[in-house]
Length: 339
Ligand code: HEC
Ligand code: HEC
Ligand code: HEC
Ligand code: HEC
Ligand code: HEC
Image (cartoon, rainbow, N blue to C red; front, side, top):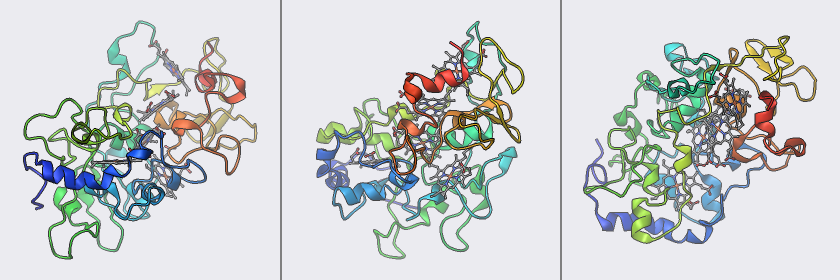
């Protein structure tokens, strides 16, 4: 077990020590992002090493090392070449992350009278992948197979094992000593910090995590008055009633025109896609369905999609298509909806 920060009541000296790393970065905090969003996922917020970030600000210590294992690789936070997650029928490309069995509140439970399509009680695989970080329940570093041989744990497919995660050392303590890395997720109390507030364990049991710093009223921010990128919008939680429906049937498969819906022309396996360039291939810039349903990855590509060809900046917020594509505001929405 790890001692130190975990389970310890708030100690300003510790917070200050942790944040000493961060203080010098305040100058960058007004920037929306320190990443270029060009060329590769490496240069986006989906690079969980945040490597380019501290290169840009000339840091010797990665400020995020306090909150998650730094595996020194980019893809590994989501993918593994072997032993991928297939628990509970998950169909996702070589998925390395923990996916908890979760009772989501889905959009249909909101009860709008206008909704016509059926919704899966558990979202499809192409949403569960995203939710493994964005529902806030699971630590960013909770994976099945860590880099190196013999460093996997099969039960990680559905449960987050802190002893296992603690076996990784970010390199900031001597070999053999206890690693002090916390395993944080988005599951943060960003409400005013309660007494005994501490940096979290990231398994949802304490409600504290990345938002300790990355929110308007994060503890560290309150104490230091600093600016941090605010991640609260990215923490969807498990109540999805206030999010665009996912796991929902797309009512207009190819060949069935509808006055309310555009019809995707492309077919690839169980996916239909809006074949924007009519080349018959499903490409990353093309909005699609999965098993006939709308999922997170229908609209987003987590690796980023260049806005205007190779080498250009990615569309904002990992969208497959820019809202301003074709000079139309809301181009993403109007791809599916006839409105
Ligand atoms: C001790 C405070 C602290 C904690 C905890 C923390 N961060 Fe950060 N983070 C920072 C600082 C400081 C920066 C640089 C300023 C900024 O961009 O917000 C930063 C920047 C980032 C950025 C880049 C923002 C951008 O686009 O420029 C990402 C992504 C990020 N953090 C992710 C995380 C994740 C994920 C966690 C939880 C596992 C986490 N951070 C926990 C302090 C923290
Ligand atoms: C933040 C999580 C995340 C990271 C990091 C990540 N991926 Fe992915 N990747 C995904 C998800 C989610 C999908 C499934 C997308 C879908 O449902 O269509 C995927 C799909 C893929 C696919 C197959 C489908 C496609 O879109 O081409 C490949 C290949 C792939 N990733 C390669 C990589 C490589 C190589 C890296 C590292 C450079 C990487 N990914 C990093 C989340 C990630
Ligand atoms: C390994 C954890 C992880 C996975 C898996 C993941 N994300 Fe993220 N995502 C993050 C972090 C960390 C951030 C930075 C927080 C922010 O930007 O507010 C982020 C940011 C985002 C953003 C905002 C980017 C911006 O520029 O503000 C979007 C959109 C997003 N993710 C969508 C997705 C989708 C869709 C998927 C699945 C296809 C996904 N993510 C999978 C961790 C993850
Ligand atoms: C129907 C299309 C669609 C679906 C499905 C969808 N999104 Fe989004 N998402 C968007 C659009 C469009 C934006 C940009 C909104 C904006 O610019 O304010 C966005 C923004 C985001 C952001 C950034 C929020 C912010 O303002 O910082 C995150 C994170 C995100 N989506 C994650 C997800 C996840 C996770 C899922 C699945 C649970 C999902 N999205 C499903 C269209 C979609
Ligand atoms: C991939 C196709 C797709 C995209 C892109 C898309 N939607 Fe949807 N949307 C759907 C489907 C399918 C439904 C469910 C409709 C139903 O059941 O009648 C839906 C439902 C909705 C609803 C709720 C309807 C209700 O009756 O409660 C709203 C509002 C909505 N979408 C707005 C948007 C907006 C705004 C955007 C762009 C940010 C967007 N959609 C992008 C497919 C899409």
